[in-house]
Length: 367
Length: 127
Image (cartoon, rainbow over all chains, first blue to last red; front, side, top):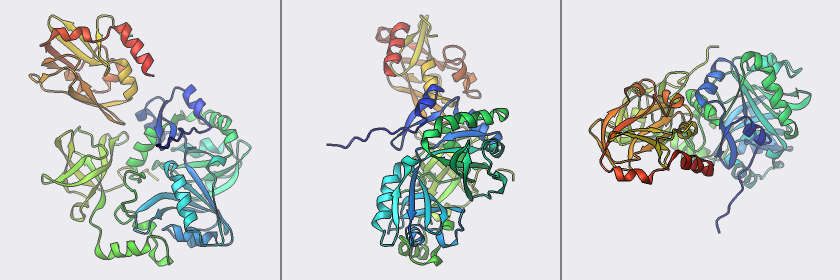
């Protein structure tokens, strides 16, 4: 008998429906893909401020005298370099160097690490970490204890600042503070997945509806809009950020995905290190590369990429880029083609369409 | 909302037949489901299309969807306005944003399509 797991809902589910959101299943969750429209929501985040319910994201907490050692052993980035109140992007890898997941690690205290992981991967991640817990540490899957919102865009700080006594200007990029939002205990992190400035807040789910309403109210003067996963995807693609299941998966290594910067070989032993060292030695056979379409055809996930008429790779994510007015994508290509300025073709519905490899990110916000 | 003189397919296309020529488009329900439409790919005039087979595609930001021919025939004209302004499909799917005109080769296919009333029941039931 196949196991049928019920579709899960965040605390905001009925609010999304009442607001007229179009709902889709994403990673086992019933989530809003859009409210008014993906392009309008995308541009709101680029120019003003957008509010996302990302309560589907998983949370794993590692605590105990050897919490740092366990976290360092199961992730690629250097946990020892994190200061209390700081976060970093990292990888959970298999022994073969492929991704279990890509995650954010927050150092809450010397003996307390808070991981934000992909919704669809959370049970797998939890089991993976637990299986390697030969340390004096506890591992807990605590997703149910948190709601998570992202407030993103040039006016994100001004919006959120109205609702918290915490001085948001004092939280550096990729740092976080435990404080209050709307009088509710909240973890406020200066992080995001949009390529825009912004914050992600974590708080008890019971307060979700009132905080959602108050953020929208606080952002009204900036024309805040609720935004769905559709805009979240086009925003992260313009910023060339990886999405699990697309750019990275169990068969992809961080070296192939252009994520060597989250692999700290010199930190000592970690899962996947041997495989990555071998891969670094022998060289990777494919690399993630950005491209722009020459004309109107749109590249989509999974489309074949050709060089000089021969199959060379595939598109991992492809979409119109609303803020750039062109059609962009990421693809895997053999090393010799994985540099900007190479003429490629993307096979769109049987027809090779011209494209050109480019530098990433496609979009970079003005500082 | 759904004109009485159109016929509708289960794949959410409409056809209006006048003098042996069918004007074809996608329904308002279809454009709502797709969201922001950013690209329309249509066949060249002269192309023969068969009922139920893909005659082109409509792309939203999120995805690409086939457009299926609600009737068989030969494409006589495509809507020139859509190449530069695909977003018109969101604004006026039953009017200015028609997709193609087809000279019907099998007018007996028409009764297989739904009336406006039946189509509205159909999309109500689909939800």
